[in-house]
Length: 392
Ligand SMILES: O=C(O)CCC(=O)C(=O)O
Ligand SMILES: [Fe+2]
Image (cartoon, rainbow, N blue to C red):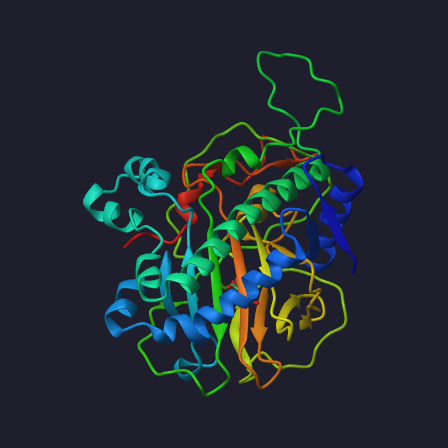
């Protein structure tokens, strides 16, 4: 599969190529000026260096201050498919502002939480302090690279979402019966729901099997979602209606699901293989951008073949897959991509994952497909935060 070149100006050809690839394979490769091959290389190198050198050099006190229980803004250990002895280490950051509570507090207040329940959690800033204190140079380089990469991934994601809106043919909202040209497209439909830049960037380290230090698990993969049908390509909005969904249990990016059809040639690894490091899941994101380790290891699930398909590494490109928010938004027209990570060599593996999230208070109004009857449409609107991991 070749990569799709994206820029600010939406190209219909690129838009169609991107959505076709998501539907046919569950992923596509992207190139964009904001993520140069140098930046991509730098983020992978410094990410790996964090786990092999920077983090091990910290004192127990500093390590403790980096730790996050909720898998957000800090260091956590994630128990994947191959058990506690082969846990995955993660370092996660969010938007780098001094008052991150302003990104989510409106959502929690309107969802009826007490401020004492959510404020301490959502006020957590990116924990650069211990890294800069212990290793001023390496810490600073790591920080700058991650922050540059975070902003670049936001830019790429927004351009990807503009292209997706174009390929789907999303119509602008009609106010007061105003007449719009037949071919009018609301390119910023998704972008406007991501205006807070409230994403999650995670560096993940899969130690060589059997090499991880034993420790208590901090976060687990869990959760589920239901199947949606596919349909014609032109979508339109449904007017907001219905009750928001009840909060759903969902882990920090990655929730189990049993869905989707892909086409490529099947791999032979049984689902129970001890070499599976991160079990089958779909991402809790709108889209996910992955900078994969050169050794590979990512596999997407083909439901028709009931098999996992290896995703080749394209070194100078980002790999994009669809997440559960995009699936809900498009009422299943673009399905979230079920995938997993398998050990493919004897070495350790490092990947950098950008989960593009909608604003917590964005109202996700599943779109109608061209032939749907709005009176019969089932999918209810909900607030994005309802699907995010709860702060408790
Ligand atoms: O490490 C990878 O290549 C992918 C990780 C992943 O799927 C996730 O964190 O959701
Ligand atoms: Fe994932």
